Amino acid sequence: MGNWLQFVTEGMSEFKPTPSENRDCFKKSYNVPHTLLVKFSFDTIDDTDLLEETLRPRVESIGGTIEKIQLNGNHITPCVQVTHAKFIFLPFSVWKFFAYILR
Image (cartoon, rainbow, N blue to C red; front, side):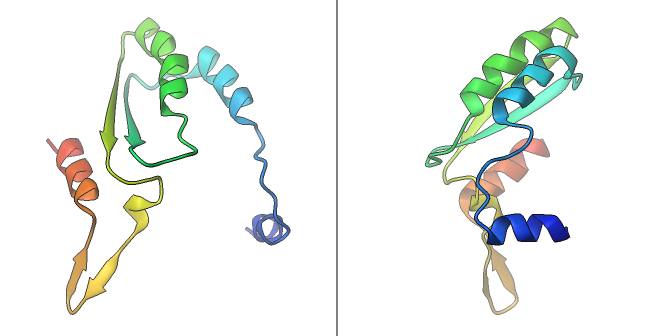
């Protein structure tokens, strides 16, 4: 983790591999038969639709399924916790996500 902390403190904003390099790799070698994509309603950096377009042909070619759901919030929403007394309050969208995946 040492290098990552240095990259963040120095303001690194690009990722390796790049998103387009990842998509190229997924087109050829993605092998997860049942995929759930989670899109958030207020996320300015969301690439879920593009990722779905990239993955769908590959997933269908291996006989799999791909499903996309949309939740309120942004990509940080699942990480947010507000504590009060002995209870942990999570946004409704997080509970909805858990209910969806546990059904």
